[in-house]
Image 1 (cartoon, rainbow, N blue to C red):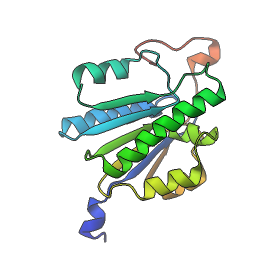
Image 2 (cartoon, one colour):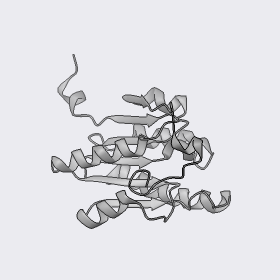
Image 3 (tube, rainbow, N blue to C red):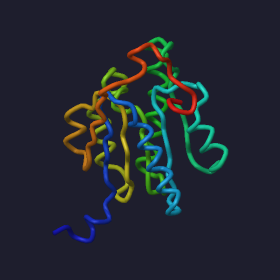
Image 4 (cartoon, one colour):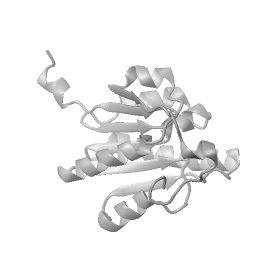
Amino acid sequence: MLSETDRERGLLLNLTGDGKGKSSSAFGMVIRALGWNWRPAVIQLLKGARETGERNFFHTRFPELIFESYGLGRAAGSDEQRAAVAAGWARARTLLRSFEGELLVLDELNVALHRGYLELDEVLTALRNRRRELNVVVTGRYAPPELLAISDLVSEIRALKHPYWRGVPARKGLDY
């Protein structure tokens, strides 16, 4: 049986795998949190300045919500991308310690770790030492086993079929 203190502890959720829907699931949790008057925040690593429906939605309808993107997209060189991710991770570290909200989404953190843009031990330490009540959702392919081990929930989104495999490009409103 969990103690009352453990029941109040924030959870670490990891949405990983090669299928589409990891970030979309996290954004659904943000909407759910808003429905309960929680204060969520989203930090996107690796995603560039490309206009997206989710960013438009949250900035327009919830301008007080922290929704920040720290990435340069696919075309960026690794040094430039590394610097952008480092800036996003610095912001995320601050929020992990001091954000007074209830939910923090770290979008594409798994991929940033996989590409070596961040140090795994530093990320694990920051997640373990986050503000006790803060729930954190991590997304992205290639979740490292060490991060999965400390996660309270792990969901693997698996691709069985995808229009991209037939040459169909990403579509506005469905993919971004």
